[in-house]
Length: 185
Image (cartoon, rainbow, N blue to C red; front, side):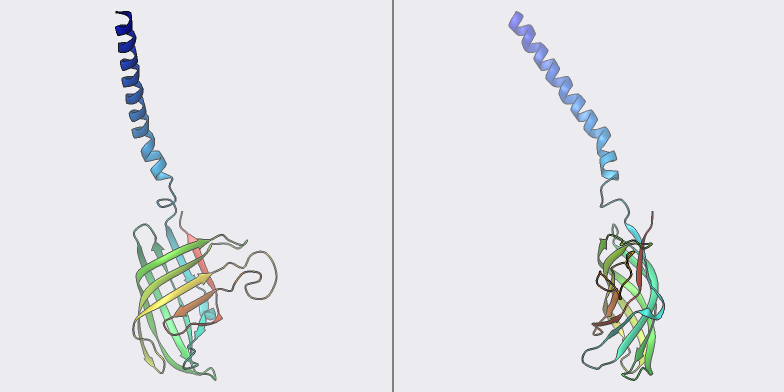
């Protein structure tokens, strides 16, 4: 009889321990999910700062100068925004121009800031280009936007970090860059 009482006590203890564990798991699960990196801080803005962003087509020698802004959300994933672009020949004369609109978010990798406002990062997207003139882009193009952050040290462009840049379709030789990402909180 005594062994039966001990057995029942152990069964009851195991039952209540299991029930308590299940209850605590149910209560804490939403709290831990809310704090995961994949759910927190997923909305960002991007800005191509003025006419500072240019890249060259290695085959034609033409240069694209691109401006614009928008936002993206890595949890959706979604993206919006767009801007303008100008095509320059080797002498710096305007030979083409147009507009672009972000259509598809591909990827984003944030980078720690280097002492400047905003954040660094590497964004890849697809955009629809519409333009006229020599070298003007039309249709869907792959776009890469890189912001390395300037930091609080004085030095040459990007020192000691790699420079900011934008690549658009065949325009892949980095010339100048001025990019900013901001985390929406």
